[in-house]
Length: 100
Image (cartoon, rainbow, N blue to C red):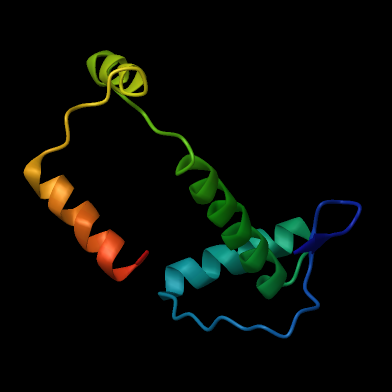
């Protein structure tokens, strides 16, 4: 989404997103858009886009407890011994996905 010099979204795409809103939600969007000097579609699209970016950014971070972090950081140096199930899965992979 492009923004103008005042960071107001410029909608010039062909894609649409139809949503149903409860009257109080629509009224809030209409009032906020008017106060921002924007039309409702641009205001709603900009708000949805900002929230989408924030959600995507939040999923990039993995939070671990200190004990889990310690285990995670040791794995490259001391990997666990493969279980029989893992060995069988690897053999299936070699036969089906990467046959020699």
